Length: 199
Image 1 (cartoon, helix red, strand yellow):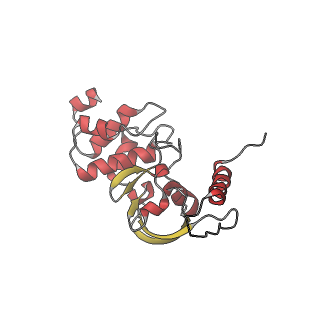
Image 2: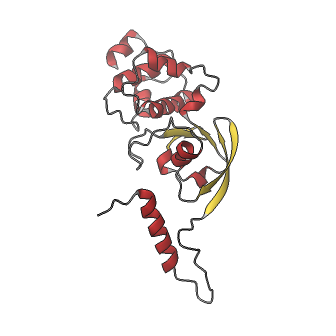
Image 3: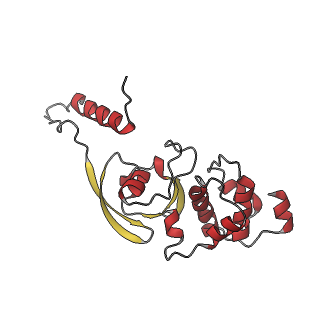
């Protein structure tokens, strides 16, 4: 039995849905040619740069970022909105980009991990991650950074519990949570000896 990719599956089911759609009474509808997928042109600001992109209506935001804009910092870990590796900021709020259709980003602002160091100079948060041994395998790191960045943008001096709460949507398979929390506290300038012991 041959393997069916996610893309081929959706192509097949999409064509089937269109072919079997029942027209409204008194209206005639023409099914598009098999394999045709609706496309929409969207305008989105990505890391401060205005972009105009034609997307298939079924593409997720992470697909567009990685496969069509070359921003591969956002990782696809689960493809179902559970692990947080694909976290980006959408209008400043952390979202799983694998669970967002690209068309939903039309007219909005997206920041990816690449946007943290636009001129090649690391963000203080990235520096703190390095200094406090945050990254292990590195796969979840970009999502961790973006969740932490969202927190520090809205609350520059969070408590230990607030950091832990903000990072709960990001899974680290290396179980390096204490180092991530410590890194965020350090970036916020609030890491004390007692916080180190509790983290």
